[in-house]
Length: 258
Ligand code: OOG
Ligand code: MG
Image (cartoon, rainbow, N blue to C red):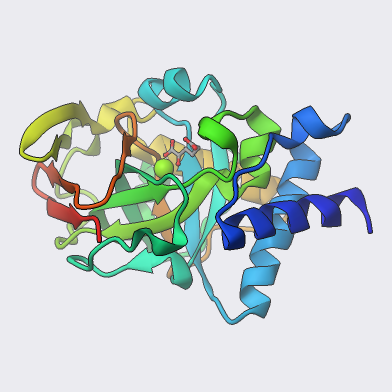
């Protein structure tokens, strides 16, 4: 078994058995970003072999709030499958999760393949058919969400579930840097942010994803959804919690933890 296969097995088992593991970089030497993306790709390939479909991509650590909270200041890229998507209003089943946290994000619905290494915000908006609110539920397979850059990349950037909001806006109908979000837990405001929290403008995050995929000989596929990264720090979810993320112009996502 190669080292890559070994770490794939460790992370897949951690998720399935809901058993946290120590960061890979603490267990073995010479584990870098390239190996980490190889582990991530193999984990996604397993999901696909099990019948899931890749529906998009996500960025992580694109806001200062997230970078400071996680102690990693470099944006990261992960993969979303249909098995991760929850319908709006569907209770969050804690059963399959370990220690989930929720974070509000701005989602891009991509209508044309995107590749290129020096794209602009406008290039991204040209290839986007709609913008909507999202909440990502992250669930690190590492103890206490404690990891280094290669660890979190290997763990598919803590991806677990995501929910898209009720309203799809044309990409230029609103200034994404100014889209505000208010995050409430049990009716109390716990955090607020605007789109500018994400690299100045959430579409900048999508340019970084395009650059990374182009480097690998891939592209952002038409039809995919891209989560541009948590605008605020993530909020831990416990049984019976009620969370609401209300976005300017993009509606509101109510989360009820089942
Ligand atoms: C890593 C995933 C970060 C985001 O939006 O910043 C992420 C983590 O915080 O566990 O999804
Ligand atoms: Mg996220």
